[in-house]
Image (cartoon, rainbow over all chains, first blue to last red; front, side, top):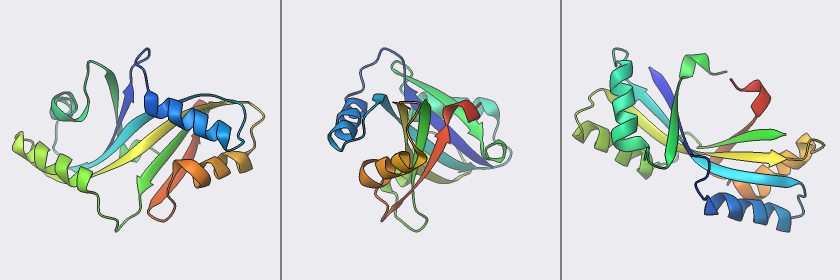
Length: 80
Length: 80
């Protein structure tokens, strides 16, 4: 079973990498970039009988820092 | 206009960060993780009149290294 875990910074958490991208795009002549935020995408191939509970635990224990990050689990077959 | 740029490593390119995640999940007792790959997710807020051409150029010039990475542009309103 293929999963996509999307980890993004919570609103209000400073994102220097995003700011750097925003400024770099401006320097390259791309105007009108109002904001840029950077997150992580983790693609996992797990056993088909893996429970939702286990997947949630993986995210909480390792993949996301829930103090500053949100995470979302997308099943690959539900993604275009 | 909100965009989501998904940047992933091409198949065949080694992904040490993904391997580290795979092994760490195993050490934590999550069995059956066959593979893990890590990518980037860049959320951009651009002017509504930004052309597809300009978005493509942003990806090629700054956001993705097209030698080793693929990128995909998703319009936020088409994402659940």
